[in-house]
Amino acid sequence: EESEGSESEDDWVVNGQSIGTEPTEKLPGPWVQEAIELVCTILPRLEAISLRLPTQTIHDALIKWAKFGAPNLRRLSLEAADYDGRTSRDREIYISSANPKQHKPPPPPLAPFLSQSPSLDSVVIRNYYVPICAEHAMGFDTARLERFLVTYDGLDALIIGPLDADVKATLLIPTALKKCRVLALNLVIRLFEISLSDLHHFPELKKVTLGHGKLVIGSPALAAPPSVVNGSGITSLTLSHMRLPTGLAGGVSSYHNIVQFLLAEIPTLENLFLIDLRFTLESGPPQSAAPTSTLPNFKRLLIEDGTMHFGPSALLGLIPVLKRMPFMGSN
Image (cartoon, rainbow, N blue to C red; front, side, top):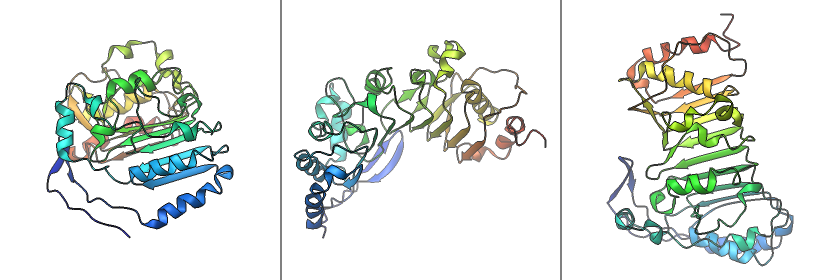
């Protein structure tokens, strides 16, 4: 049982790309409230909760469940299935505001519920507003998390997503994610930039996914000793819809240089997934002679879209890297 509102014909544009029209609002049927009531009776035994509901319905569930608590809860996934009533005009107001944070939603009622879950070690947030900033508490302790996945890629991602400076000041610090092994930041926000050195604070990190931002390669932070930058021990890296700097036009030779650079910076890397990358003409990774030593840990390389429109030569440039992989060395 759903009720539909009116559709707007205004396209939203983020990072220069149209991401469609404003969706119709959909209200959940009465069965959802009945399900929330039912969950109250089994909360003490639950170890995992996954919700994909309208924002206000998630609020209602958290408020109700806070009266009972979930002491055994270890994994929580929250996805807002709506854009919470905002329009393209709200986005314009947010962009033009001298203080954008004033236009963000109020913090969600997470703390009263999650404060009763001492074993929580995995949180997944998708298009559900959680304040990642110094002004408001998130509602849970990121220092306890082994898995933290954050995605803001909806129509109102710019409004409900964090600011780039807040990501660096509240998440990418030693005390915030000191136990984290799996981290994903897929943020369609303005000026989201991250460098490999931003991750060297977290020795437990094994799997990292970065999306819809810019991987800063020419930053002064990368002048740190390799032992510092490589200290994270990352084994799997996914870059999706990221912008990467390159000093060469066309992206053919630079594509090989980017892969070689990532393998050199993260010697523990086993899996590298490059999905729909975009190169920008600016200071790229340092040019150096191609190493010939084998890559004993490297097992998988996935390339999807990205610079494939430059032709097969973009792949031929990767042959020296492939020959360094253990299973290719004898061929």
